[in-house]
Length: 471
Image 1 (cartoon, rainbow, N blue to C red):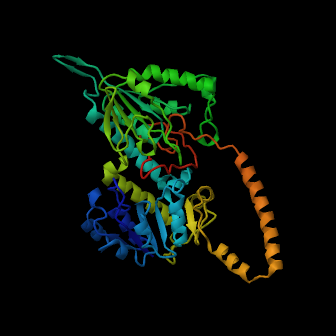
Image 2 (cartoon, rainbow, N blue to C red):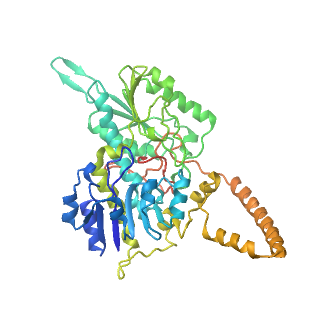
Image 3 (cartoon, one colour):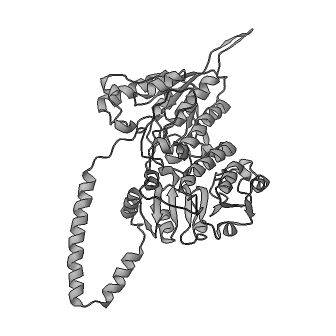
């Protein structure tokens, strides 16, 4: 089996979907690996490192993809890259499948089999394949370092002959993987760390890292987490109490790090303009949801700005700011995902369509979109693939007589009626609240070393932006 790794071409992307270690392991599995020249340069992984691991270096994207069975990428492919794919090739990447139905349709019509890695289900067996968690972990760490760069004071308490400097107060909003890593990093740097989330189980995780948990801990809060780790929708009264608490506490904070993102939707607002106005001069906000609309309406994507005396950081693609480390983690996720799909005898792909991980991530196959949620999104936007079956029906209709035409019309009406009824029934099904809808990166489930973490089996994944989500 031939595996190809393309160089990333989207803006702000420095990562690469392979590492020398993952290349060696693919070769040990009986695969041939080709990587486009310069693919790892942005991550300090040069061609020579991949050649030494056993990969062949290709001069351009066309030569890289030609003859490949599997193509590995970080980001979804560009239109030019899609043109290079051949029917039957398999692509693994972060595809933003839920938010880019037109792109999914293009890949389906090209005959590409697509596994969207952001849709890996939240089950124990798939944790080592979870790109969102691995990348969010590093984003949480980097968020603290970015804040320190613009914060005009030191984080730890310092006692000197000239007097004492008090420690900085750091407030992390959203206790998912990014949030937990931010808590751990800020604590190691000597800050006094506070955190909030609507899920009661996160309190133990925050406290295990030395943080102080902030929330209105009434009876409703204790019942806020549903089965599977999802957060229940809170009452208006609770929301008001929580908002009042945040408004009071945020005035005391020096650094605020927000991490809340919702799969396929705009990020929720956690920090309002009034909150920003009430903060100390020189305070810093790091908005990890900047790419999906921001947790603060004053955040400007891709910029560092100062408003009301507060610095707001809206860096794009935060995981790419640590490209070497995040590339290695992403490559390991892809390796762990692909290894069970490689037949030990034939060394070819062997897809088990009954497997939960395959069902959760397989978006396109056989010229059509096979993932239910992605298909629904494509239908809603009118970007559904044409499909061979529909074409065959249309051709057959021209050859039939008036009677067959009438019969077809009647059948179509009945089918349409049934479809409408099914769609109506489907619409009535309530959608569970996402765990991070109020103040947490619910797509993240693993905690950094030292945290007491309870596994969240949330099957929703973030396809919100190019990278993080993210983280």
